[in-house]
Image 1 (cartoon, one colour):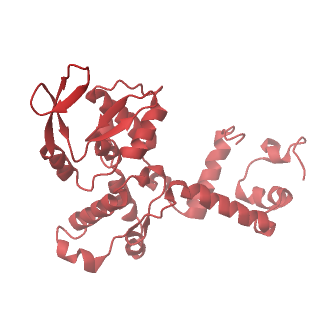
Image 2 (tube, one colour; image 1 turned 90 degrees about the vertical axis):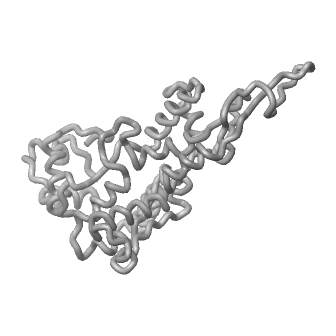
Length: 284
């Protein structure tokens, strides 16, 4: 690789083969990832706001909508109950203009709309305009659990976690169920850890316990940990590891050691094709 780009595909495949098959001893196809992340949730919120009548541009206004998402959106623990709450806690909003030009909201003339009093929130844009957002607050993050909302035909995050755990050996599954750790910006939505824990419990009950909920607590106690600094936990971990390695240079090999001892055994390629053994290779 050079500057993060693969310059020799054959050699890169050998690195992957060594890493996955010989060192980690896992099948790369078992590693699950989702295309639905923070950017997809933001784009979905743009689409939902357009349906409400706010004409945001997915590219130009992405940063603005992201701020709305981070401040107002949350994960519904139960989507059906949240939708019912939104539909039942409404009021009639009416408005008329007084002779002095002021706009008055009341309940006696000119009905304008129904508004959800419990879920509806207002947000002031940088230009002073005020937008109102209701069910969009939880329907945008819902795409993390239901990717079909954003035209992604793949499992949601809870299904992926459940599937990954059950591909591990039986001896490790209980420990994994009881120590699920979430990290990343999209896990910061209010209610996300609870929703994930509930869904994992439902999947476990349905597929493992065959619907017998009474055995759930005795068989395994599913727990999702949500540390407050999880938004940048990956960066913090990498930074801590880098600091440790910098203070203890003996834990990683020098370039000379890698060139003469590790590289030849790690990946077998003809010396004349290896950049490490070329005449112009750098020596340290």
